[in-house]
Image (tube, helix red, strand yellow):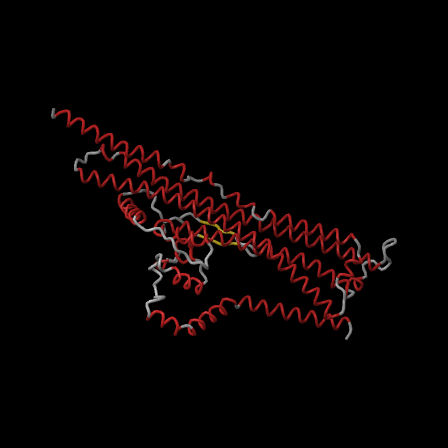
Length: 448
């Protein structure tokens, strides 16, 4: 078998294998659902027996509590959702309002844009909204803290689930947007690291194939050579330099034309939405503070009504401040996940491509009897230096892949610490105590 026929067989087998892998990747969702369904059918007798014994009882998605972790986790695995996403979709929530005002734009990379009208929260804190907030505050403050968690889940997902569950009725929209922004930014990092690693691998493998199979000689770039350098070596050097420059240009274009601005836009949209959202929450907070301070100076004289009003607005103050605290806690959760997941992608995706490249070159050597690295090494230090420069550029781009997170700056929005909850509650409660003391002294003094 000639070198060309052996190479053709190898290339055909490689293309066939990559095609099969691509089909498997595209069909992964249906394969997983099918295997999940088969597993449920096979495990039905065991599950039925356990339910008869009172173990592993079947639980609805709405009944999410500390004793339902395993059931919810199993449901999440089957539906390809995280625990946080499952908590967000409680009560059949589809986030149609949010999706209507969100756009995911781009071709290779995506960026998230949020149009005006995203927020469902009313502009003003009227009496009806205040009553709703007071009910949510009563529910939150009287609820047990969930201490159990699914051991198969990551901790940040468990934390996100708790926050989404506790504040689903008031802040699900902003939590949903932050989660979608996280997924989009992680997706972009995954694609960037994969594309860059593939480009670097193609430059190396392309030069191996071009030199080993005589493609450079067929081009006849320098038939007479360049000075002391023979024609074949000169052609290989020029071809290698051209592929290195081309790879660097493609990486530069992908990074600066799409990836960097798209990541920055998504982070900026998340920060802008947080700024607008927490500003409206702050408006409600200031209204509640003003109402609480004015309870004792109005025309109301019924002590029970005064007490109810004081309770209503104090609950609103506490509830709104807690919402800001936990929204910021979830922001920390999201930023952590973006950094952690992205660092995994930046590390393991290129490593996987390097391993795959090594396997391809090893298979080329084993099945064709060729020495893939001999043509490269014969070029000397010029190509190696150029290739290392491209690899250095590759490392530079990936090391700056998370710079866009600087757009999510806590100083841009109204934070929990700026609400001065301790000072506000001190002033409100102090005002109530001052009025009570005044009337006690006045009534007591008049009766002497």
